[in-house]
Length: 378
Image (tube, rainbow, N blue to C red):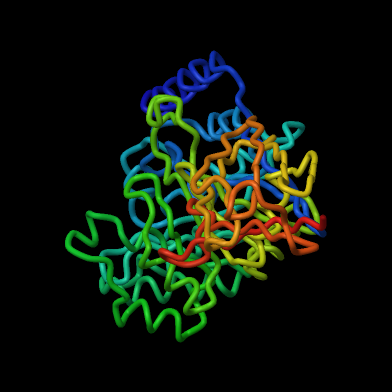
């Protein structure tokens, strides 16, 4: 009991620290037909090997304006070791239940999840939208072999309706030399037990290999902080990586439907990764065209970025027109793009002009930036 109370005290201390932080919500726009929700799909608490109480994870989400979080404490032997040591006397769903109850009235949706933790290969996988972590953990723990244990846990998670993600395939502890698609991960995929892949994890950042696999194998791109510590201390005030989930309904059902349909993108460290059909309308929504002025010799397009997402543009329109070659429209910034014929001082001869750029911080595949254009009728 003393140990349990100590853990509770540490969790509440973390909450008190968090309460002193100024709220700084992440602002992103909706796109036509969908509402954009911001979420973190990979979070730990003291109920596995994290350092904070579940309610702190909800408070952190409120401070950053997140719409949802998934509590994904380890469901394997780690939790039971803590139970056997007298730290807890509860099942493996307790952290989710605490967070969900606390989140009522905050606007934060809490998703029921857990992380199946095995050695490489196959590594770690998150199961979210599940019902019973004890059943998943027991199935995995029944096998010494890592692959057999992972398959057993994933099968139970799938029976519960879980959304299954291969976590951090580029984690340096499990991939010290290179990021590989092992035969075991292929077998999981072939068995229909992989719905998404984590292409950004706060510990090792972005994985171009995982991003390309997502495109190649039609998997949903996923990001997660994999937070174990108090985020304000761990990230030093920096913005956490988030999923941008484009939903039809603002609820758990809507989030799940969007993830199943691959309507998810990743925003991390000033860059966005995701399917072209999502990133194109997202850039259009970020860069609001406030005015267009035309003369026979000049076109001026004023654009405004009212979001938290920067947009970096690099000219790709050839030599026909002259305009700024590289520009960054920072959050909150206005920028006038001035276009003239290549031979300065002459007049336009075409009835319309396309201003074309590559968006060098928006990627539809590993190393493949989004193409962006503004069409102007004169």
